[in-house]
Amino acid sequence: MMPVLAAVLLAGFLAGCGGGGDGGAGNAALVTVGQSVATPAADSAKGQDAATLGKPAEDPSLCTVEIYGDSIMGFNGTSVIPSMMLQVVRPNLLVVADHSVANMRLADLAPFFPGLPRSGHFVIIENGVIDAWEGKDINTFINEYYAIIQRVRDEGRVPVLTGFSQQALGGQLGYFDLLRRDFYDRIVQAIAINTNTTFADWGRVPFYGAWDLVDFVHPNKNYSDRLIGRLAMTLDPLATNCTNILAPQG
Image 1 (cartoon, rainbow, N blue to C red):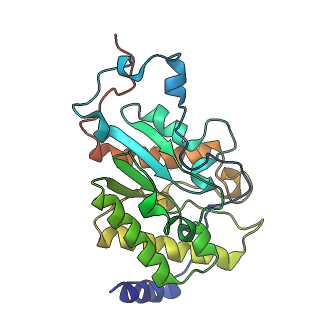
Image 2: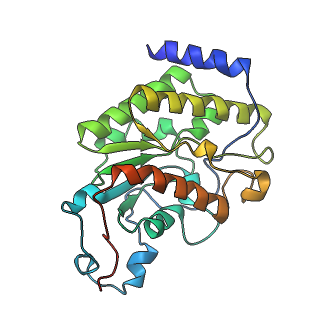
């Protein structure tokens, strides 16, 4: 079934491929695997115990977010990294860990994913664009995504796929790298549809070319904030009972 999915998408891609592109890895230093997120919202509380910051939902554990990604998810050219921005724009959700690592391929993450400890209710997966640039075997790519999604669900958590952000031609990527980005992004969307998995569709977030990028690969703060805004809106229907986790009382 999965090879058929790839073949159908490939046919559509070859019939009408376009430009565009995406970023995913790079040279930036990122949050290391397992590091908890020190958020601006928490910093502004001046060290207060989280339990005193607001009225949690009935089950606060259902309002937690855990993130996996490469440097697109971990870097935006500033000290306020994307996971921190998610915490700022959605204080009703608690980002408990950001596992974004530079150059982290889906192929690097997938073998270790089942054995990694997790506590977040919503598990965000952004990895895969580096695999796309490199033209990884599409059936292996699909199988890895399916396995990760299934593992998250087996743990009683909710998987959320971002899809790939856009990339401008230049730097380390050529025209065909960007075409592969487009094709594999459609594959991720098809996987989300076939598995009934929430898809943020980062590829549809407004993008203004190299102007929006730090180095042809990584979104600058403005574009990164738009991507995180789309992710936040995607999470909203899933977190309707999550209110004021970090909001100050009074």
